[in-house]
Image (cartoon, rainbow, N blue to C red):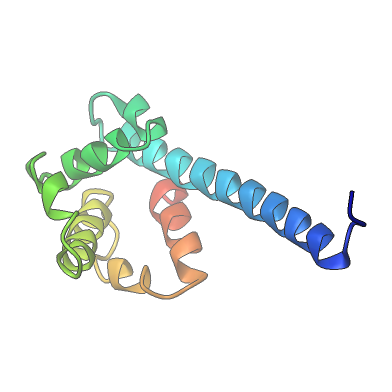
Length: 120
């Protein structure tokens, strides 16, 4: 057996912190989408908690066809469509659509979903 090296411990801690951070962020975005779906009276709000289905729910809230999910597989197109969908979701909640553009900014993309979900 080899001795435990300091970088091995750092890798272990980093992977644990990364995993917990990923889970927390997933729960945050799913909760925001769930609340937005409830407030916009969208059917099947529980889809917010299912990884791929949450995109279909977001498309429903935005009033876009479900088959757009396939367009999200195309690089660059997915960014443009993502902004369009978020813009429409903001408008569905009577918030300014330009908040969707702020989603491109790190840290702001963590705050905007909460604003759209929790503000009245």
